[in-house]
Image (cartoon, rainbow, N blue to C red; front, side, top):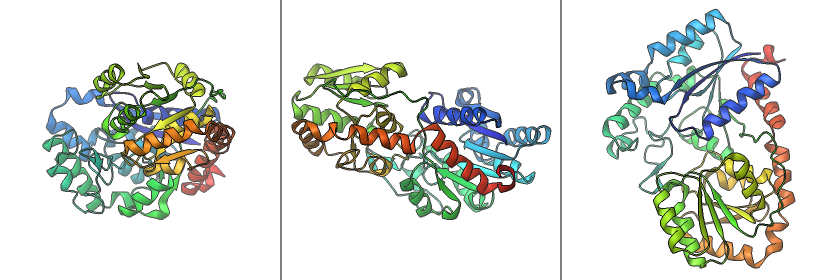
Amino acid sequence: MHVLSIHNAYKIRGGEDESRQAEERLLREHGHRVEVYEEHNDRVDTLSRLQVAAKTIWSREAYTTVTEKLKSRPCDLVHIQNFFPLISPSVHYAAQNLGVPVIQTLRNYRLLCPNGLFFRDGQVCEDCLGKAIPYPGVVHRCYRDSLAASGMTTAMLVVHRMLQTWTNQVDAFITLTEFARQKLIEGGLPGEKIHVKPNFVHPDPGVGTGSGGYAVFVGRLSVEKGLDTLLAAWEKLGGAIPLKIIGDGPLSSEVEAAVDRIPNVTGLGRRPMKEVYDIVGEAKFLVFPSKWYETFGRVAVEAFAKGTPVIAANIGAIAELVEDDRTGLHFQPGNAEDLAATVERAIANPELLQGMRSVVRQEYEQKYTAEANYQRLMEIYEFVCPKTVS
């Protein structure tokens, strides 16, 4: 197959950027031709606010670029990974006007919520869900805490709902979990077009031993990731089990303060991926305390690949990925006392999580390998262009 992959990359490389590149590599390894059209958010700094707003709603530049690419090197389908903010939904029209099917991957809730998270002021917010005009996102300055930026994002959503872009210009959506799929349907997207395909971990990092005697957190140090819950729980635990925190972000200073204040807490900052895998593989368990509706939970799947169970907040997609008492344990999101109690249960019953290690590894092998992902991707591609895939 010939695929045009379209992506608007973030200033700070994250899981979404890595996941789409892994998918492109996977396609090439199986003999498919993949051409990439990419914009980068570094370019935002070179544009005026008016230019960014115009591009967010309809980028003539992106429309022209995609049209020219498809005319010069015809493709079987266009796979849009992320179009926000510089590429815009104009590329959907560019492809469809040439009769090329369009697949849109959704790794956040951007089509329903101006900030893409359903999260505001430290808690889940669904004020814009199902609204034709998601005005609460403007009122509360939900995107970048800016009235102008929130208005720009909301304008894009309103215009393309009026144009019925998501209904008429997309042949299939890909989301990462059934939870996210149901939330998108609740927001008005056509359920018959939404397919679930999780991210994958490749290459296989190999199984760890879990003999390190500590817990680990890996991720962005931010409010929505539940750092406050994590630190409060460890303060209650009083050093009962060491905690290693890997990552950086806006709450880095809070973690540094916690290291001085709370026994047995270590902040490691960012680490190379191989070192992260080694630390996760030797941990008794990984803690995933998110407060928002995660659309996936790549860190949890990486833990599964290492054979490490996960103690996870019972919210969003992570509660779907981590099955209580099978591949990990659940606690109430945002509840430090419940997290502390869950950790105490794990410490008091070492055989509980140790017995899960083979189960979580099997979960990875069955659902989250490159080959399993490729087979699912081909099923979705066949849905939009059966003759080419067959």
